[in-house]
Length: 106
Image (tube, rainbow, N blue to C red; front, side):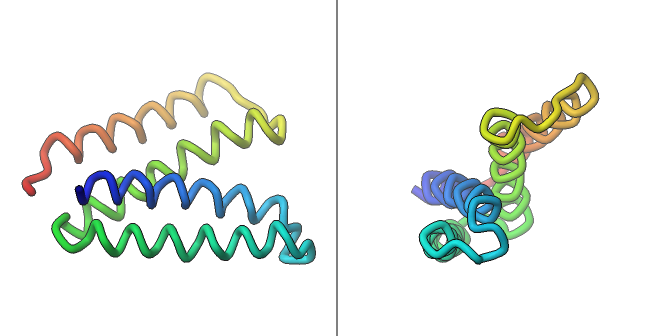
């Protein structure tokens, strides 16, 4: 169950990171409220996953999910640039996430 909590936390991390962009420095009320809710939910589910998972692995996977998700959504939603080097780095992050999951003892 802790892995499910960690993935949920990662998705909420993506939501609040994207929400920061839409909140325009917390000047837009609805995106700001949704961003804060996403932050709270992300930390809550991360805390649940940490009951059983090693801190280092869980934190790295949580931030990795957030990083990959925000890069992908940044390209889709905000037309951010994408190139081979950027995608290569994202692939390494994904490989790191998978590797940490595979070597985790829980």
